[in-house]
Amino acid sequence: MERPCLSRRHALLVPATAAAGVGALAACAPEDQGFGTNAPVRAEDGAVPLADIPENTSTLVNFGGQQPFVLVVRGEGEDVTAYSGYCTHNGCALREVEDQLDCPCHGSRFDATTGEVLVGPATRHLPEVAVRIEGDTLQRDG
Image (cartoon, rainbow, N blue to C red; front, side):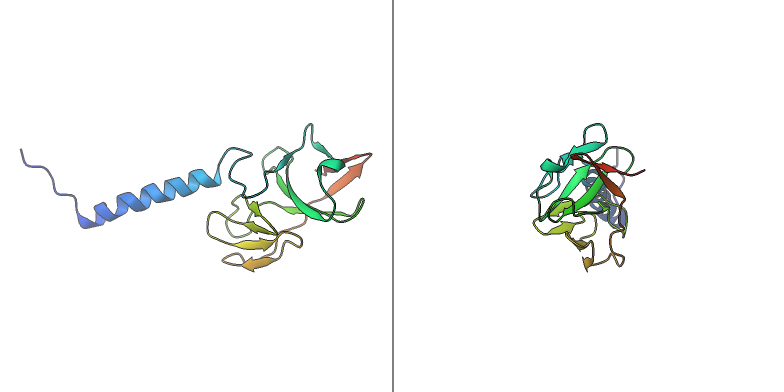
């Protein structure tokens, strides 16, 4: 019996499809894996102790829900600003690598203290996320 010949087009499509699938799986990695040098802090019951977010640093926090990751930038004391933890190019979850946020999908990079785009293809900075301090905890609004 004669085997059908695999066309060059189909032969090239198989590895590309497999690579795309691996990239998609990496972007949907389990909640606390694949985030570069710093694993996200998990907010229990929608709040994280302010003491778990060091002063003068930025920290990814997993608040749970549909888009759980938020970049929290803490200055001194209660000086806190938060940004979305998702790339503005294609919505992939970002990973923190030292003082930058890296998009594993297409290579965009963002400043981890301002949310500004450092390297494209993203062209829009990370949008701010509303957070509030209640007592000694940080909570996400909405």
